Image (cartoon, rainbow, N blue to C red; front, side, top):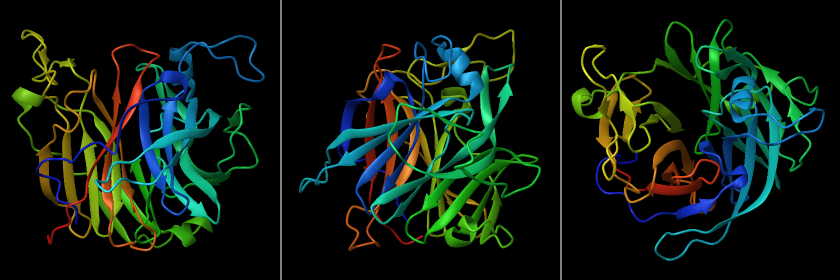
Length: 338
C-alpha cells in the first residue's frame, strides 16, 4: 500500500492554467493513453447551446453543470516530474458537483463514469447526483445533458443519493461512494458494473471518520478518494484562511482551521477488508501554493508495462483570483507492507 505519512516529493506539475479558470473538483488518469481528466464547475458568464443568456456560477452549481477537461501527459523526467497540456473539454448539464470521476481506458478512447441526475440543494446552493452514468469522452463545446440517450445510467445502490464513482486501475474495479444512512463505499468488478450487474459487491464499508486535532484543524471538508487493491485513500482539507465554528458554540468566535503555509489537508489510508483506518497524516504538499485547496485524489500507473508500480496523486487548486485558478498535482509513491 502507499505510505501516506512522510514528505511528499516534488510536484508532478504545478500551477497549470485550467479551462474556465475554476477550482478543480476531482481527477482521474487514463493510464493506457497517458491522459488526465479534471472535473470542474463551469463557473459563471458562459452561454451554452440552448440557453437564452449566460448563467451565473451560482446557478451552474445549483443545476449541477460541470466542465470536464482532458490533459495529455508528456514523458516523465528522470526525477518523476511530468508535463501536461489541455487537449479537449466537455460540458455536462444537470450532473452534479464532480466530487469523483472514474476514468476507463478502452483502446485509444476513454470512457468516464460520473454522477448524474443532479438533485438540487437549494439551502447550500449546490447539487449532487442521484445515479451514475458512463459515456465516451468527446471534446465539444456542445453540452452533454443528463437527459441524453447516449448515457449509460446505473443505480448501483437503490435508494441512495450523493453518488460518485472512481476506478481502481490496478484491478479494474468500480468504486461507488454514496449516501444511505451515512456515507459508504462499495467496490464492484468493472466489467460486471459496465453490464449493469451490481448484485455482488466485492467490498462494502461505511466511511470512517478521521481523528485529528479539531481545535487546530476543525472539521476539514471531504475532497476526494481513490482505491488501489484492498486500500481506500481519502483526502480532506480546505483552502487557506478558511474559518469554521469548529466547536458548535455560537458564543465563541470562528477559528481559522487552514492557516496559510500549513493548511489542514489530511490524507488517510483505510483497509477495505475491515473498514478501519490505518493512518491519517497531515500533509503540507504544495504548501507554498496561494489559496491551496486540496481537490481530488487518483491512482496513476506511470508505465503500463509495470502495473504494480503506482502513485497516489493529490490535486490542489491554487490562485488567489476567482476565475483564474490553477491546478497542481503532487504524489506519493512509497510502497510499504501494511
